[in-house]
Length: 99
Image (cartoon, rainbow, N blue to C red; front, side, top):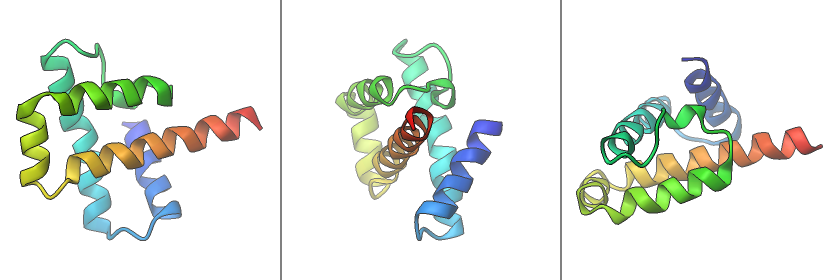
């Protein structure tokens, strides 16, 4: 998936995360997408949502669901951190487009 690779590259260029963390975060976006689709909160993968505003709304919905907030807590906030970085990535792209 091209968007997944772009996000991974962005993480490489803009963070000091380890390679294993970057791989986990890019995979977490797919996992989060599946959870949101399971609850009919989104229709397609988060990688196809270009608006940071839409992503923030999806993020709020996702973590309101106890199953996912508990999973995030048990996973040392991996899912919330992945989502945070993904929103930051989208905002960065939005800023570059507006320039």
